[in-house]
Amino acid sequence: MEKEMKKGVKKALGTERTVFNDEEQRRQELLLAREKQKEEQVESLKRAMQSGMAQAMKEQAQLREEMAYQYKIGNFEAAQAIQRRLDPDVPM
Picture 1 (cartoon, rainbow, N blue to C red):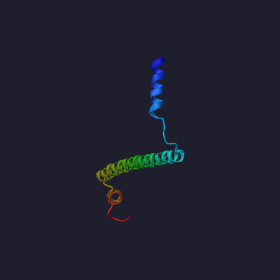
Picture 2: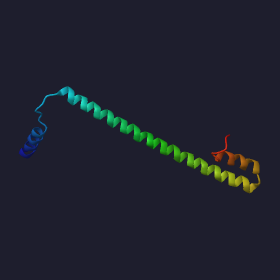
Picture 3: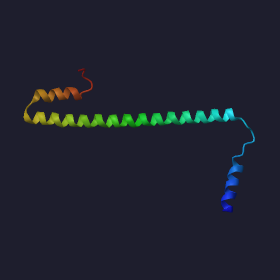
Picture 4: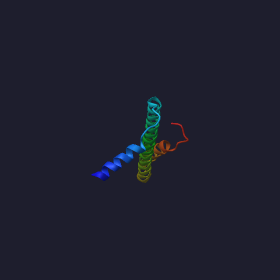
């Protein structure tokens, strides 16, 4: 128990303030909180973009499979329509 009390005293001594500038300290805390929130927003946006890109890639793969199937069964019009959807350079 004495060890815990000594540790507590050491922690208190380490964080003892000599300058009492509460407003500046609060301003710094708010600034750090804002920066942390911005970083979290950026990370969540990155995750959302990556998941969106993954979904788009899956859809493209499915369309390619469907296009190949349409060619195999001889439905060239449907296959060409899918090809136009997959080609990013051709305006729809």
